[in-house]
Length: 194
Image (cartoon, rainbow, N blue to C red; front, side):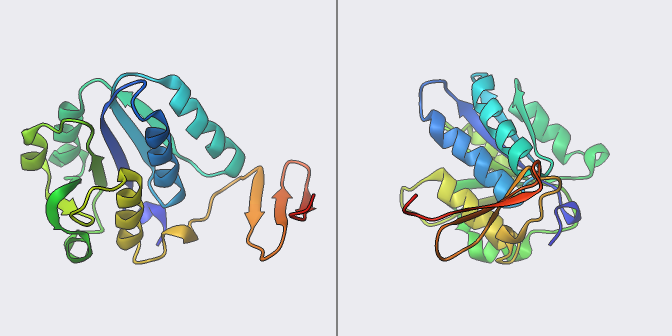
């Protein structure tokens, strides 16, 4: 399913510098790799995290936007407005409905925003969301939950994304490492022993 059919934004709430910085970077990387178009973060502003994600995009291709938000609630209201295309908000929470059931009901012809909570999610997020979605009801990683919902929205084809203008392209292989370096127009092969 092409990205343009239903643009997806991943919004991370309440980021705090020093608390799980790798989790937030991994949320952005998973969002990019599995079909989202942009990654927005509210809370503390950390350009280093965005630099890492933007460098991956530059190296491995595609278009992926990152941005810090001062007011996520205002952004959500605007996103849901008629002027912005009546976007659909999906809130990932342990207290929601089973993602496997809900993913079938979510319209695929409107922009989607997947909200990933932080330490304290305001009650208003639950009310503003069109869908409060649970990927299991046990404590686990937000990164895993995001990956599973994205894959379900893409009907199991989230890893089939095509990325335009990559500098490097990894070719799946049973043994060794096969990489195409498009900037040098050559294939690089490395065995595990090297």
